[in-house]
Each structure stands twice: as structure tokens, then as C-alpha cells.
Image 1 (cartoon, one colour):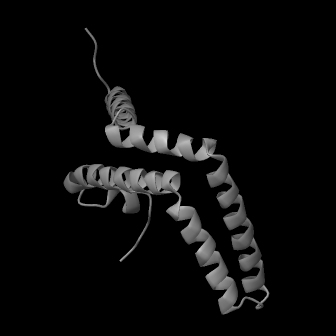
Image 2: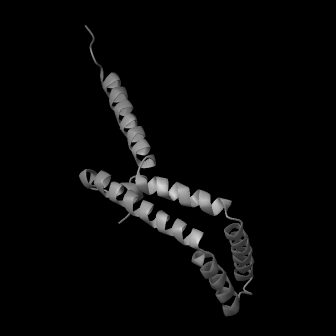
Image 3: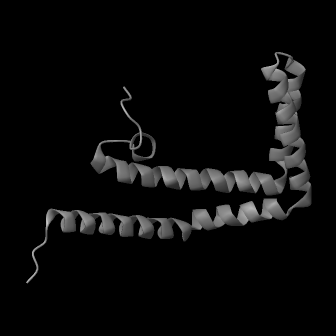
Length: 133
């Protein structure tokens, strides 16, 4: 005969919650939205044209950030970065990636709401925070 102590009960509950968390993570990883996102991400990573646009955009963005920090950024610099971003986003492979990302984020938000409802707290935003009004 075994007597369950508070420590045993807490450990058991923590273990159960961690198991549920792992199962949730696995279920998300097996979802159509996550699989579409991973596939679209891999397509972008393997597309030479997309990678070239990504490098160009990142370089322009870094240059703009530096210019902004030194007070030398111009409206023309902003427009240059915006054009580069638009060109990147217009690539079919990148458009598919962004759409898959948005669908995954929507799914995760739905899951967040389901978790948050019984807790009366926005799990994804507030659970780790402190003292927000």
C-alpha cells in the first residue's frame, strides 16, 4: 500500500501536464498548417532567387537601421527598403510561405484561445508576464 504525498501528487501532476504539452506539440507538428508551413519554408530556403532577394533585403534593412541610428536615414531609404521587401514578397515561393505562415499563426492563435479560456488569462501573452494592466 502506497501513500501519495503532496510532493508525489505535484510531481505526478507536473508529469501529466508535461505529457499533455508534448502531445500538443506533436499534434501541432502533425497538423496540415504546420506541414504546409515547413514545406513552404524549405521551398524558400532551396530557391536561389528567393535567397538572393532575402540577402538583398537584409543588407538594405541593415544599412537603413544603421542610417536611422546615426540620424542619416532618409525617406528615400525607407522607400528603398519597402520596395525590396515588396519584391521579395511578390515572389511566388515567398507568397506561398507568407500565406502558410499566416495560416499557422491563425491555428496557433485558436489553440492559444482554447488554452487561455479556462485560465482566464491570455496564455500566449500573459502567462509568463507580470503585473500588466
